[in-house]
Length: 109
Image (cartoon, rainbow, N blue to C red; front, side, top):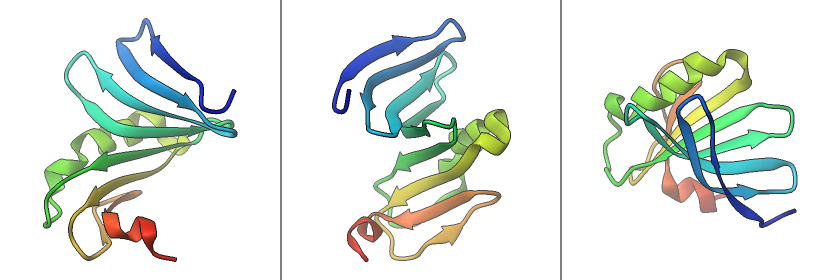
């Protein structure tokens, strides 16, 4: 049901808290037992995943992509994009399917 919230723990050591069910996708926060963390994970009904990290810095840094790259490598073709939203002004590539994108881009057509 759209807007429904639930807490899910899997037996693989992955914790998804505050999971929000959308009409055609599930958005959640992801953290594993080692401390790897992704702020927003959006999973489409067909299993494709987009991962988003939210950063406060104005200069994009390679270390922001550590967990996004880990998720990309684990999911393979199901991973569509890893995006670090940040306070800078440019969209910048950081490797295969990884981008730093200004938070302000969310409000631009």
